[in-house]
Image (cartoon, rainbow, N blue to C red; front, side):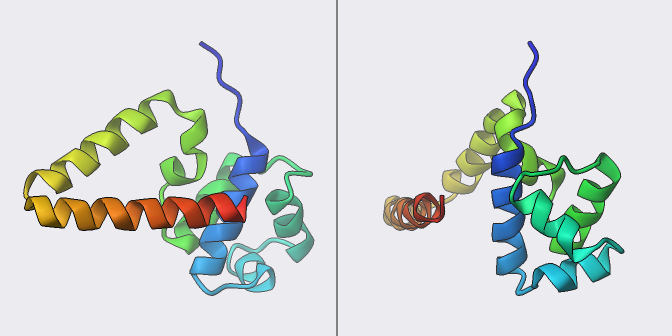
Length: 114
């Protein structure tokens, strides 16, 4: 099964994680020794990022490669769901409702960013 890397979504995730980290494109570029214009091109999916550069970006942003390319990894969904299930296993029904509400709110805000 061949799954292609979705560079548009990858760029959107990089932008989102960069902003969450409080970094500008210039700051991210400086930290990974890359031109600012390259970061812009990666975020807009007008260029394909190399694996070494993607690893550098992930390290600076403090995220895993899985988080950046999760839509291109069929197994990512399975282990993410298992991680959430493990977290919920120790929660009370009230805590589970609260977590569900938080997830729904966060998902809605992600959809607005798209």
